[in-house]
Length: 167
Length: 360
Image 1: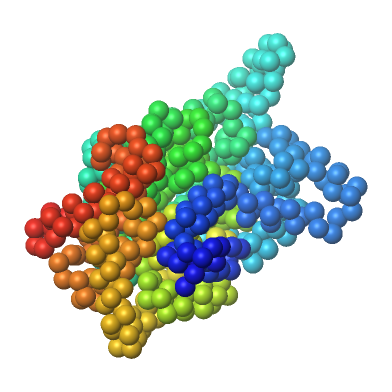
Image 2: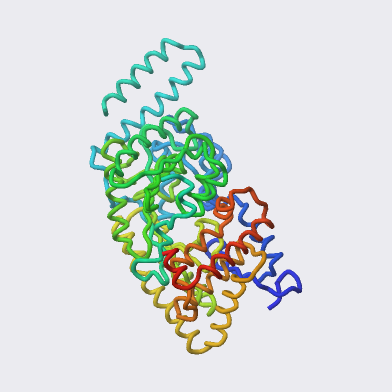
């Protein structure tokens, strides 16, 4: 068999999976090396999710989408646009504040919307309670940056209080 | 244990033992977990990452009293050492290439690896040679419980464990089995197998995970969905299908033995011949030829090598491993010469009973 890119014999037979579909490639050593170094350099991990996240835009009017994109999580500050372009969420609270948008995406990925597996042994409400700390630490950093030291001190005490509740 | 010991140790998953180990290389389960009181990695500050690292480090250090733990600060490791860990499946490529405070804890037998500040705050991974997903699940579940005793994971009443990427939400669990399927590739049936796996929501990937080619005819089969099924159901989904694929592969091997024995024997012998005599050889070609040799050993066409020894070669001929063995920084062409030299030495001098004893 000849290489599909030149007249040399094909010594490499590669089965590539693109979007889950296998594709056969028959290449000579030089073309195989070129192919393999090219494809391994691609930043693949996020792309599948980013592609899914892009689907959220489908069926939205431009104005609706622009408005949606500007919505930000009150806890971590990530905007919906940032999530849509990176495919990664910013904090646990995003699942609550972007629930409406994430729901169809989650059903699309998993075909289900309810967890039925293992649960932490500690009270489940504790997790959301701890999430507050993300917002408080962010506010503390902002207060310090803006030299609002009285506010910073209040926030510091509050963070200490919540942190010590657990340990 | 030190990092440099890894280059000469036989890690758990290439031990070449356990049920169905002629075809099943390893069984692996990983879990994604996040602390409730920190943002996901992409929104963390430098300080956040350092704190997450120290909280989880402290917790992880307490869980494996029975085994010696190797704790590695990835932000301080050389690139070649991080690459070495990727080649041994102890960290992900993403984890190796990321920035900032991040680490991994590995047990002495390379069964467990706990990645801190990967895509999620914590990724727990347990691997075992051969097909034994139930055993792996039991171990990872215990580790997860032990860590959770002292930390609060991000958890949602309805959605379960929360992860940076919605593809992992719910159980946060990925179950995978690595298979060696050369006969299905030769008989061109592999596509058909993939298509049927996709229909039942199982993903197929190459040796090094997402985006990697199916080098050396190795394929990882894993669950695509993580929500809406219990952990045991996810384990069962994968473990139910694996015996069928093993069966297809065995049938394809039988077919090759019966219908084109000369071609098969020729293919295997040539592959072995090239590996023993080549003067320069790329990693890809090595994998490709080792795959034929591995099948040849399984079918009794090569008698002076054993499976653990070949599994070793798949790993030790990878770029970072070669570099560590020779102790010098090499470019691709030097590495190809060194790889060929290593293979000649390993396969010519150390075959037979001597080699088997040394590499078992």
